[in-house]
Image (cartoon, rainbow, N blue to C red; front, side, top):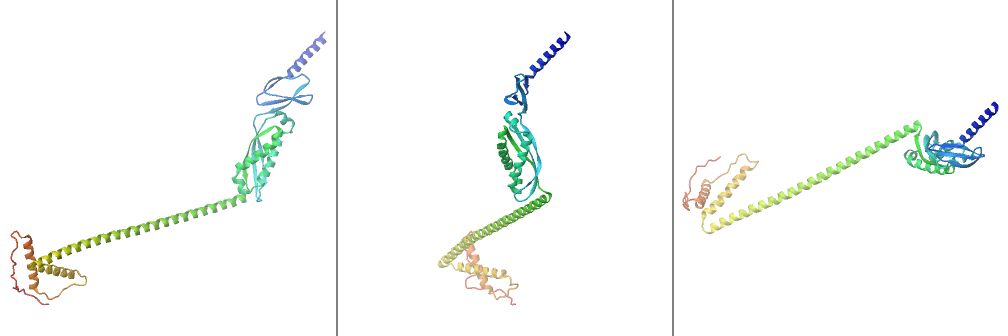
Length: 325
């Protein structure tokens, strides 16, 4: 009896184990493939699932979350025969669990090698300068090629990023010297342009100054001409008045006119820079007579009692001692 009880207990345990093996809970972010006698039949999505005992079993646990893989560094020879060391990262996601499990062996390793091969192909077709300045273009081109190649594996490559591009040390030194030369060249060009602009501004300023000076001289000439014109008009008017007075028989007017011009002539001689001492014969009586005429005209014009007789009668001369040098 005891043997039958143990055997029955073993059967119960075995049946429980078999039933438990048919219950599968798939976690979020994973897909399970189901095989029936070694042949793929279906895919289990996240949740609770039941398998047919003995007939079905879980084949592969497939991660369907986005994953990142490191692309090892490798040496790449560019089109202009420069050797650079390149590494990067790739991001991918499994869209079809069955294809990723049964169409390729070791998905991650296959993706890494495929990416490294295409990095050599894409970068080897470019010059070093383009390689260093067009990372976005390289990333886009790599993504397009690798994503198309992995489509048959049920994989979507979302991004490929080149992390580092390291040229040899001697090439880095040469690039540094080239950059320094370019910067010095730009500095000299900017300095030359600054000097040119300063020269242009200076010339413009001098031109403006000359124009303003010419306009000032022209304005001054207009003013001088206007002043001379007014002086000439005044002189002409004075001469006309004197002429009218002489025509009316006023002899004192001519005496005033002659004395005025005589005094002006003496004033001009005194102002001459080459004259220090003036010695000339003078007729004192004629000068005094002229001055007397001047006084007579002034008295007639401004005296309160009207015209007055001259101090010295006509025809009489006054003797004034004169000294001879």
